[in-house]
Image 1 (cartoon, rainbow, N blue to C red):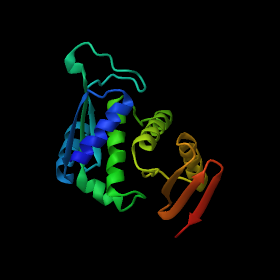
Image 2 (cartoon, helix red, strand yellow):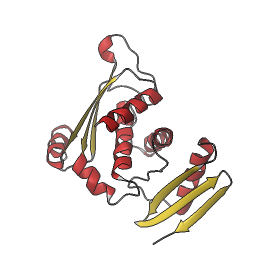
Image 3 (cartoon, rainbow, N blue to C red):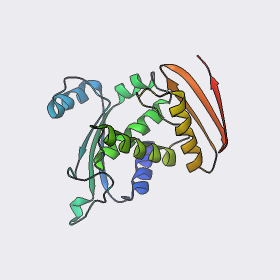
Image 4 (cartoon, rainbow, N blue to C red):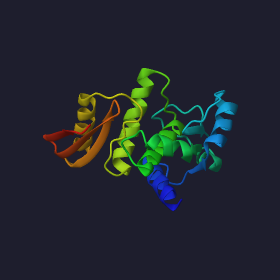
Length: 193
């Protein structure tokens, strides 16, 4: 729990809201399913639900504070069971997947959405930026299908933003692809199936 608190505080510092409140409820598939049914009318477990305090906030805009209560981003509910089962399909550890979900949830609290292709792209860029600044050197690919070229582009961007060094791993169509990045101009791709 202390690691999660420290990680969330780093995120709050990075996004410019170091003294804002955020509620994080870690639960089970059974419990998150009830919330998903109640608020989204979906009768299934999900990994994360976000409830923004500033529900009309436009992505990328600064929260305007008019009273002390406004220093609240909202609430996030995460099913640790779902994180564990999803981790088995991902290229990252349980901790890194949980960190990615925290970033994803906080992006929703900041007005980011993924209902359209352009919104999705904007949200993914924000997530990847935060993930690269805050988290250990892993590029999280979520459940999206990436081509080898897509991952190379992400890695090049990551390396360019991090002074030319980094290490990352990814999955393409459930086959492990390991990328070792040694410098801005050198990307060595090792495929292990």
